Image 1 (cartoon, rainbow, N blue to C red):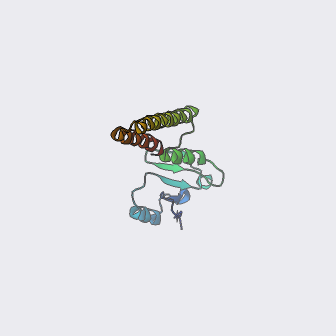
Image 2 (cartoon, one colour):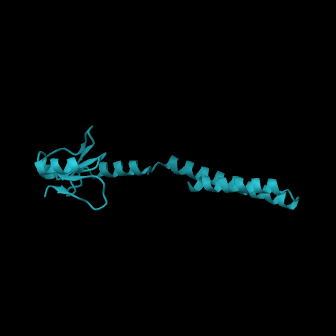
Image 3 (cartoon, rainbow, N blue to C red):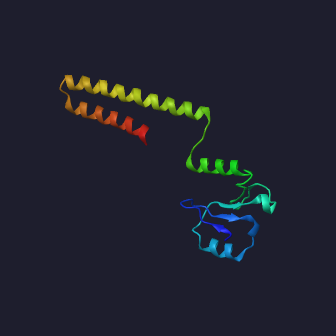
Length: 136
C-alpha cells in the first residue's frame, strides 16, 4: 500500500515512487486538511530532498536525506527554537517574575502586620499573577 498511516502522526506519509497513484489520490482526498504531506523513499524515486511551496516534503528515511528539514519543520510548529539568546531571555523573564513575586509577598507581609487586609489581598493577587505569568 503506497500510503502509510503513522499512528498519531497527523501528516500523510506517501511512497514517492507512487506519485500519481490513484489510491494515493483517493486517500488524500479523504485526509483532513494537512499543512504538510511527506513523500518518502526519494532514494528510490531519485527525487531531490526538500520542501516545495505546496507543503510537500521529500525525504528518505533510509538515507536520512531531508530528515533535518522534517525536524526543523516540526520544531518550528511546536515552538521549539534552540537559540542561546532565546534561552537567556526566557531565563531573564523567569527571574524577573520571581523577583516581582518576592516583592509582592514582602509588601503583603508588611500589610498583614499593619492590619491592612484589602492591601494584603491585592498584593497576594499580584504575586499570584506573577507566578501564573511564568507558568502560562
